Image 1 (cartoon, rainbow, N blue to C red):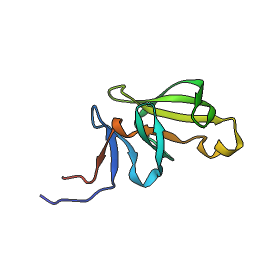
Image 2: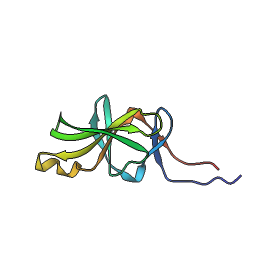
Image 3: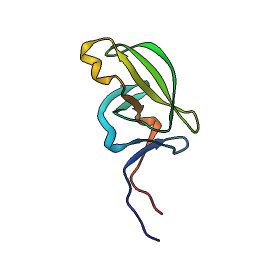
Image 4: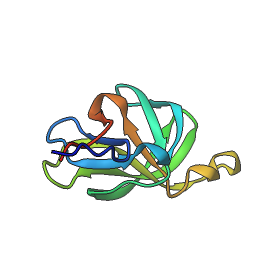
Length: 109
């Protein structure tokens, strides 16, 4: 059997569904509900909850919770809108809580 190295991924901690690529990490210096969180430019295999205004540490944002598309585990949230100019860079980006994702370094075939 050949062993192929694939892209570094992050998967749901509950069911190992692939949810983000390591190459899409923008920052590892964010705070989630229960600890450290990562900011990603893209996410996959997720379902978005309803949009709601939420007062976060950096001000008021419109966000939608992110759920794993397989097991429905809450993984974080998507920034839909930032009300402060200094926070606009977050719009359309995804926060995934470190405790909810598992790093996957390679695939074996």
